[in-house]
Amino acid sequence: MIEFVPLIMLILAFPGRLPQTLRWMCAGMFLLIFAQYFTAHFPGAGAFHPVIAALLFVLSVHVATQARRSFLLATKEGGANHATFR
Image (cartoon, rainbow, N blue to C red; front, top):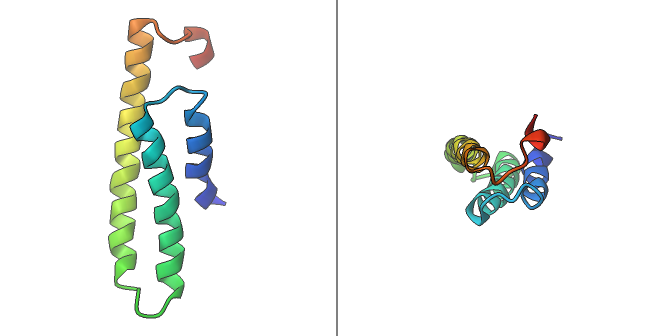
């Protein structure tokens, strides 16, 4: 079930008005998770499994910090309705 979290993030990025780069990063995380499944079950591709895991970790931390920064910027500028974020 966890593989669909980036897909849900991508869908919610549109009503949340996140920057387009964050939307693409969510799609990239979705693809990296499926690459993890592929490398775990495909003989000869196991060496890429830890590399993809590291990329997935770095990308997820980057998305989280950028989304937080985007949220704080929107609330600071008054561009977002504060009642929806409580």
